[in-house]
Image (cartoon, rainbow, N blue to C red; front, top):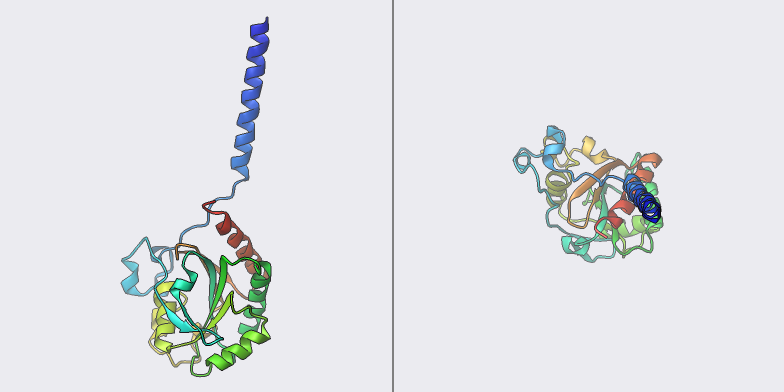
Length: 223
């Protein structure tokens, strides 16, 4: 009789543990995808990059931020960050995008592992001084949110070959202020290994809320 009771208790305990761990797995969210050139529309990818297929990471860069400091790719090595392209004199989507980016900064203002990189597409106007004025207007913490300016060709090539926010055909005319690239609304989420993990509409409160959620997922990834 005692053996039967022991066996029943043992089985019930086993069922309980199984249910507990299954519930834990059910509550776990799927990891964010790792986005490579092969996963994107061909028109967004430089033809030379398509053959890479998998294993894409953001290339090296070096630009000046709003404080006149040189910010290189080493500054975000091992960090999670959000990248965008904008220009300070934009009157259409850029103010809305950077208002949403303020939400991101405010949500993670005590997180040193989260950085924000705002690259200008109009460096002739967006000097260090101009970027400083704009950054201050948006309450940017210069230790976390970098407004970056520099050589126009380098800025556009990074957009075209690393972040994939510029169609190759548009990259041929870097001075075309009417280009769709100038008005790109993409926020790009990059992980600690410099891999793209998501694109988000920077003018959408819903999409930016999803971005904030996904940043938190990346912060838990690997823990």
